Amino acid sequence: MRPARLEEFVGQDHLLGSGKLLAGMLSSGKLRSLILWGPPGSGKTTLAQLIARSAQAVCVNFSAVTSGVKDLKKIVQEAEQLQRLGKPTVLFIDEIHHFNKTQQDNLLPHVEHGTLILIGATTENPSFEVISPLLSRCQVLVLKCLSPADLGKIIDRALTDPDRGLGRLNMRLSADGREFLIQQSQGDCRTALNALENAATLAEAHGEKQIGLIQLQEALQSRALQYDKSGEEHYNVISAFIKSMRGSDPDAALYWMMRMLEAGEDPLFIARRMVIFAAEDIGNADPQALQVAVAAKDAVHFVGLPEGRIPLAQAATYLASAPKSNASYKAMLAAAEDVRERGALPVPLHLRNATTALMQDLGYGKDYKYAHDYANHIVEQHHLPDQLQDKHYYTPSDSGYEREIGERLKLWQEKKHRPKR
View (cartoon, rainbow, N blue to C red):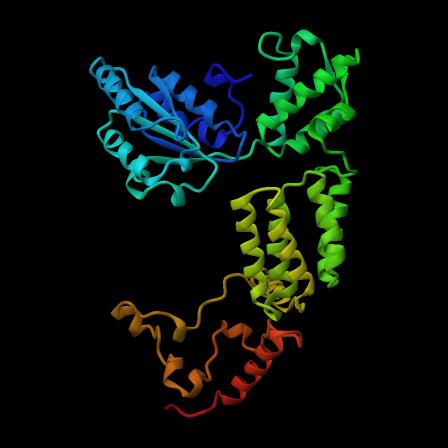
């Protein structure tokens, strides 16, 4: 089912859509070296082959494991001959992050001189895996996981295509089986097609013409949970997860998190919700909570599943066990309400920068008090618009570190009348 033409390629519209970078490169026929960085099954290998084909280039596959310096020299010699005939050579290296520094150094001069157009594919961050001189000569294109709609289109095509797909079997795919297959594939086209083929084999062996949930569960070695990623149960479970953390119940938070992961939820969706929760429901009661949540998000993106569940679990239990405060969140809402109701109130003159003589004449910056010139770096001076002088948006709670913040702010209020140092 690998697309034979660029028009058959599904997904990555941010690169191949009208007016997008890769689409423009292909239409111009001027290729440059590329690093395709994306998750498994997102189409990196297929896209590399189609790029080479669209430019009428010779595409040569090179392996870090089975190929050596001798093989590279032969490829370069052939590429130089083709270059003299006006035909480019694309060197495709799948999983380029397996190349060591010496191998990458050997590639560098040939890419630099244009003898080879390098297209490297990797699931790892190329900033860490590709040497800087080689990376600087390549355009890094980030591929995304295929969307549910993209996977659905690929699955439907594979099911009906009589030449390259399963069309000759005249199989049907049940609606719940299709949804389950899309969920469990996690944006990975290869996983979806392998599972569909295996499930079709199981159905055919039993003389059935419909691929159902049972066959797909067997093919994927995973069972369906009551969890519709776009329906009510999705919102019920994520709500239970958030409220369990807010209620300081790490056990319940872990249960609901695993319900989502086992049902095929995107782990980055869970991580994003925890980042929001850390700022909204914990805030300055434990400022480290936001760092933990962001670190978990980065870790999941870096290692993927199933190991990504481990940093997610650490973050969920940390957030559930942390002291809670929504004081910053409430302060944000109150400030936003004043902005909406009162509009763009003028900045007080003493807070404005006097960058020209005219601004100085108009009083910009006049009587501004530089806080570092005062004891404890505290100065009696208003910083809100004149119409909001009595406003107090942020009132720290007595929870966790925010208690210390509250005491500090109170002490500063008492010291604001101290004389200049």
